[in-house]
Each structure stands twice: as C-alpha cells, then as structure tokens.
Length: 71
Image (cartoon, rainbow, N blue to C red; front, side, top):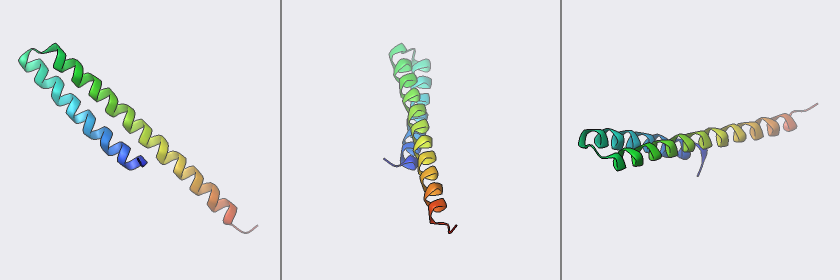
C-alpha cells in the first residue's frame, strides 16, 4: 500500500472502531466496545505507517533532486 492509501484505510478503521465502541456502549456489549477499541488502534497504526511511508518517499525525492542539481 502507498502512504496515502494506508492513511485512508487508517481513517476508515478509526471511524469504524469509534462507531463500534459507541454501539457497544449503547447496547451494553463489552465485546463490541473492545473490538471497536482494537480497530481504532489499528487505524492509528495504519495512519502512522502512511505518514512514515510518505516521509520516506519525500526524503528519497529530495535526495534524488539534490543529486540531479549541477555543482
């Protein structure tokens, strides 16, 4: 996955996790609340992974641009 697709998946997982936690609270399901919390954490990790991939890509592009510049 690219950095942007990781971030998009992370945002979706965070939203679904929060929704599950909300529904779990309303219906009194500890299992659903736990699943939601886990999914939200997964989303956080995906977003961080996307940020890291984007940062690495930017660093490589900057290094390549620096090499291409005439001295």
